[in-house]
Image (cartoon, rainbow, N blue to C red; front, top):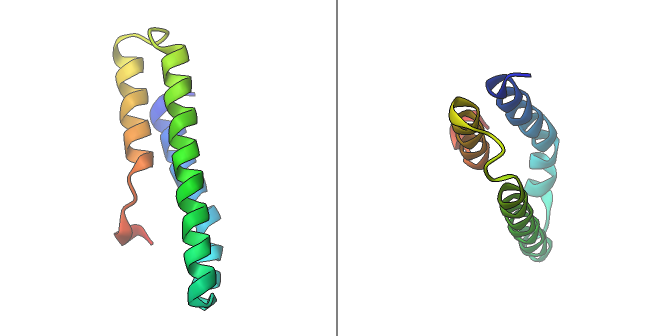
Amino acid sequence: MHLDNMRDRVCSFSMTTALPFMDELRRLPADQLEETADFIHTLIEERRLRRASMIDATAGNLTGEEGESLETALAECSTVDENTW
């Protein structure tokens, strides 16, 4: 699978998965919302550390255009566009 197609599928899946939870978050009391936010921040940090570890472990395995495509896809999936919500 070409990396651009992979990026589109991963980003699309992430948004589709996240949307049902948006209404649930809006209904949470403030204390639970803060607890949820802390949990999400922990997940994001753990994800960042896992991704950095995987990139370090595979560094040098992709060359040229493939490596650049992967780097671009990872950067785009790490950025949330508030206008797409």
